[in-house]
Image (cartoon, rainbow, N blue to C red; front, side, top):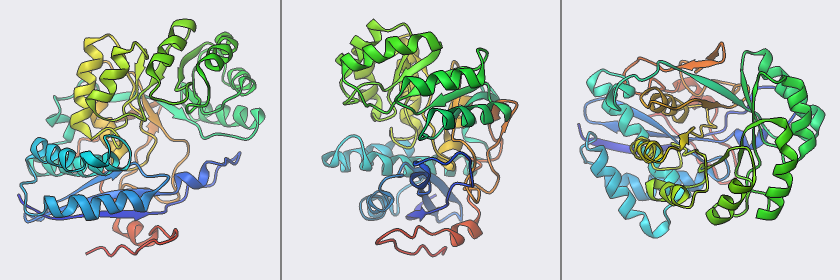
Length: 371
């Protein structure tokens, strides 16, 4: 099965109407899918992380990766991934290059499952858990009262765990009051504080029984500083979504910087790298909870990873839904859990009509023709 074409598909599907409003809404409305076609007639679909710069990621796929993969054996996932890593090494081992590699790698796994007529979880070690507890990962909101409304709304939908993206204690207090003591509450601050500030504010947050405090320190790679925060605070510390590769996450573990590792399948290098990081986490007694703030094949791949990996306690789910589903069969949460597909591959092919209806229309955007 030879690769005939690799193409990035840049989309702009807006988030469906939600209340209260969030300043993050516009950023979610950017998606990059990766399509890999073969001479067998099969097509694989992956997804790259790209909320901030979708065209930059797409250019890496189209200009750097596509030419080197044309004519190669699509089933040689490990060898092709190594080739991509080595070719893009000079561009950096995290960021745009790794986002692009991740999207292609996921599409190759999708192809592998389709070629064998089995779901990807069957290729990753078999089914360890058919469904996984989901937590609602909220947007960031302007006021504590908005946070309380949003948190109560997702609990009413059946979620039993909620993650906030605020940077103030008042919002956490309101959210805890809104969801009650039985709901797991997490806080992702997205790297805003010095070590000293993280310790000071973290102590104020202790009374709200956080399941974890995520990325409290700037810069995110200050693992020594994060280890100091971890030693000073009572709640678990989570990090890793902004790192890439096994080696990046090994540095976190070696520094003693995290109780919870959060690799992102669309940032870290793909499913193969995720499984290596899972082995690292298990060997060091660190919990792995994958970052998965996306809606398409990347979310589906995360579910296949979690379903085939013992000990993964949650999967992150974005709030609400896109205006049109990014996958032909939408991924849904039922009773606070999400189930993995048993269809061949990732089971996350997009609807061609949606691709045609929602091309990305940002500055310098180019049209995508479904050929």
